[in-house]
Image 1 (cartoon, rainbow, N blue to C red):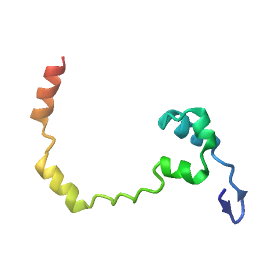
Image 2: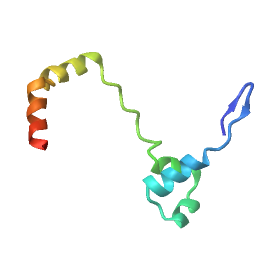
Image 3: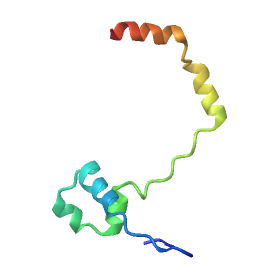
Image 4: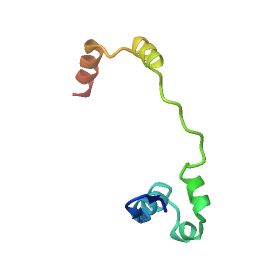
Length: 81
């Protein structure tokens, strides 16, 4: 549990942990409850390296290579009807 200087300890986020373990990871309850906190953290992706943010230059390059022009959007919408 994290602690803050003035508010005291924060409650454990049981709803979030149960959702991730049972719904997103689709672990059987027996496996979920048998995991250690470190195992759960690893299974939930907590040990993977952080993804670097896309730089403005990279975003501008992608926007130049794959422009969203009105004509291509209108053509796609016509096919969906």
